[in-house]
Length: 116
Image (cartoon, rainbow, N blue to C red; front, side):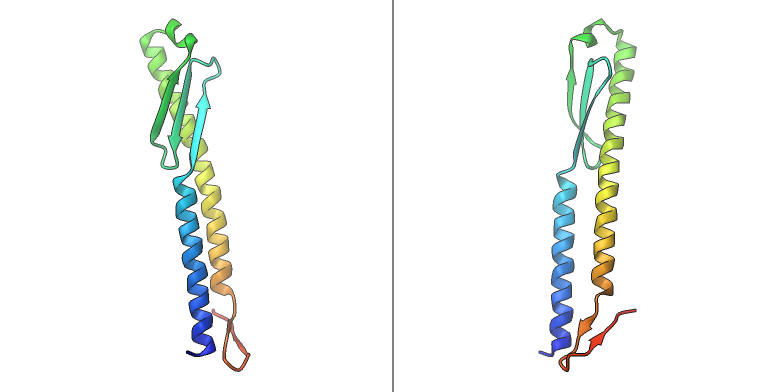
């Protein structure tokens, strides 16, 4: 196998590892937000899906419509936090993938090829 082919394979392995890391990290994203009055806490995953809901003692004094709205608002706030975390992770992933894509490849004679 030529040095250039080995260089291409090494890059592909690094890209695969980076993609696997991105996938694992994105699956581990969670966000938990508690309302100011501590009546509601909501937890969501990286996709913004509700994974936990807790009602504190102040929740019992709210009317059903106000409690329902507080649950929705709190879950929405948690989803925004999770989206911000995912966005940061995606930005880092994109930067690193671009760096790998632009990294020079080495030929068997020691010269390099710079991808366009």
